[in-house]
Image 1 (cartoon, helix red, strand yellow):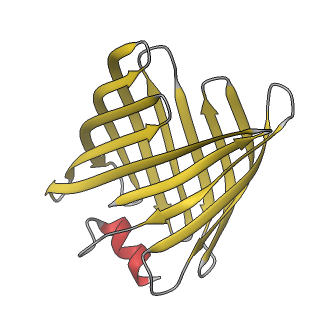
Image 2 (cartoon, rainbow, N blue to C red):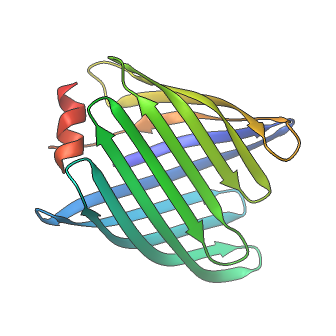
Length: 181
């Protein structure tokens, strides 16, 4: 599935980014997963495994490579997905090379809307603020946006984008729950 296209906007700076992720079941409780990201001057690709640890939480570890202007280096990622009733979230932390990156989202689904809070750490940007996702009914499209304040100096930072989901059938119980809503 194509995960999202988004733009970080901070003052006069915008960095368009395209990511893609996949999760394929190997067995009932073990998934092969991938994640890739491409933006100006930097790209990464990691592969690994995700495992449900409860009926409402999945955790995963991945390893791969990143490439940027000063070479190719190892890249690593730890992720956590939660979905319990209408509460949902994602947490991801990446390291390797000369930068770390993290993102955390916690939302509460109300019909087609998912209001919540987002944290983003990308290079020197560490920001937090409200976010809103809107699942366009009967389509594969979700749009989202956030209005965050950079923690180091309070400057405005935002992230907005589009998710496109290509699922021939639910890949796990989380996807199945989302498709029923």
